[in-house]
Structures are given as C-alpha cells and as structure tokens.
Image (tube, rainbow, N blue to C red; front, side, top):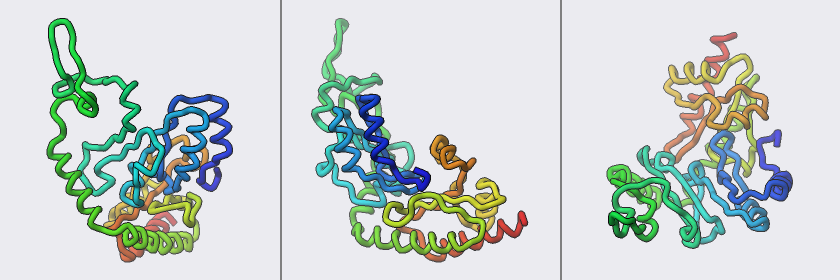
Length: 262
C-alpha cells in the first residue's frame, strides 16, 4: 500500500489468479521495516496449494522465531544480520519437502556411493551440502546464535521498540523529512526516510562525516521504491547495540546536511 503495509486482499487475488507453486515472503522488510502477518500469508497460500518460503534474514535478530510453530515449508536467514559473519546462511526445509528436491550443485560429501555406472545420493541434508563447508563462518555463526540466545527477547524488543519510537518522533519533527513505512506496531527496527532537496547518497556521505552510519539506495527493492515514487531512501537500522546518543547524532547529521545544501 501507499503506507508501506501489505495488502492481503490483493495478495489473495493474486494467488487465485496465478496459482503459484511457491510463495516467497519476507517476515520483516529490510527496506521499510514492515512486519508481515506471517500466519495470514501462510493460511492464504496453503489454501491455494502453494508451498511457502519465509525470508527471516531481517527478522531473525529482532523477533523470536519458532519454526515448529509455523507451517512454512522453508525458512532462510543470513549470518551477518544475526551479528555473525558474512558468507554463511541457514536454510530450513520441512522434512517432507526433501522427497521432491534434487541437488543443483555437485561435490564431495553429498553422495553415498559412486561407480563408473552411476551414483547414489547421501541422505538429506548432506545430499545438498556439496564440498568443503565454510568452517570458520559456521563457527562464527554458532557463536552469534549463542550470544543472542543468552539475551531475553523481551529485553531485545523492549530496547529496540523504545529506540524506534524515539527516532521516529525525532526524525518526523525535522522539516522536510518524509518517513516511509506504516509506523506503530507494524514497523520494527528500521526507518527509511527522505529529506527534501537532498539525495540519500549525499545525506549518507555527510552523516558519515559525523561518524553516523546509515544505508542509502534502493535496498534491493527498486520496484517498491518506484511504487512509493522515491528515487532512493536513507535507512536507519537499529540493533541491540544502538543507543539514544546514536539517534541524536543522526538527527544532528540530517540538520547539518540541510544547512550545507540550503
């Protein structure tokens, strides 16, 4: 929608029109911070006979996820958004789905037997893990998961919600700033915004000079930003390490940028 929320009625219409075999859906938008009503997506998709893949890359460090409580067939997330290393991710597969999945890469450790006449696959998940795994990255991801697991989700979410509200109020009070996304409980951790008369890339450069790191660009969601009629956005992303001082410095960097281009 124009507010950055999901239109579930339209989604249901698309399901009936196209009859997809697979629905892939983010749990939390990395572009706007919009929270998806996952159970509604799952129910609608399953009613039309579609498999469902949930992209939890942005959600995994901001909300508790219990795969067993979801009816998803697949769930994915990356390591670096869980305070872990780059170059590694996780793919959960509902066990029944292994029956029709075939490997698309070949390599060691994924076969049971090999002869000149053919080969047989190992049992899943080894069947899909070809070659030498990213050992150091796996150790790092395990350490990151242990780190987050030692924290309570109520503490994580309470901290980030308070900072989100503080940042949302502070940024919205700046003349010329447009905040994107539905806001309220429908938005978590991320605030994407534009500043009148400033390209987001220029804003990010000026913010960097103030030791404030934000992301600027399309956030791998160019069709979404085109629909919202913005060339790009600046994106603030909160984590467990973020503080009110970080928000204050961001606000000051925006005001500094406005003065520079005035």
